[in-house]
Length: 211
Image 1 (cartoon, rainbow, N blue to C red):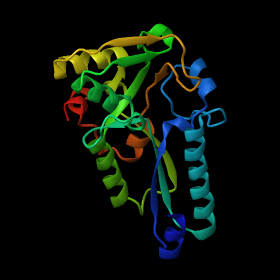
Image 2: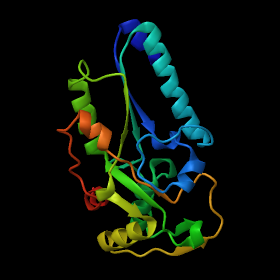
Image 3: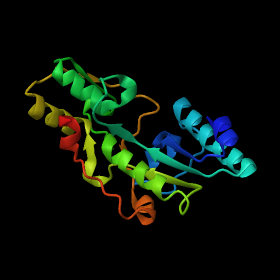
């Protein structure tokens, strides 16, 4: 893709991940992230995303094309099919629709981990604004997400899925937790809204599940 950008002298918007942040620091600081460390460890997936970011920056400097990097957390909405790699929200909805068991890993199986969730339509609306303003705003990295309004724990998500689907699922509690799981992550949109004040999150968590 970058070779294509160089050949065509085009610009690039890269969708990165909140997984680029240092996991050990996340355990120590249960805070909304603005300028968090991207040092290791971060997960293999996070490493590949950060490596991609760095390649984009290096080639941008040499070949003089512009970029925008958006780090997103959990993104959900239509056309997801309950696969593990599509995030826990679509997985939870799919399992409730099909009355499949839910597994709560770590933290005494309480499902107390908290994440923010962004609807795919709201992600696309941000990208559209960025494209229109690319000549004015470029070569920047943004953290984007659902924010505090769309934060949810696994337990609260389970309750909401039960209300909307009318189904209850068997709950399996597993004490062992993943080394890559963090108890709290809510993306701050403070910086991205500073540059794009017209961008607004229109879809609530309930909208995300219903869609």
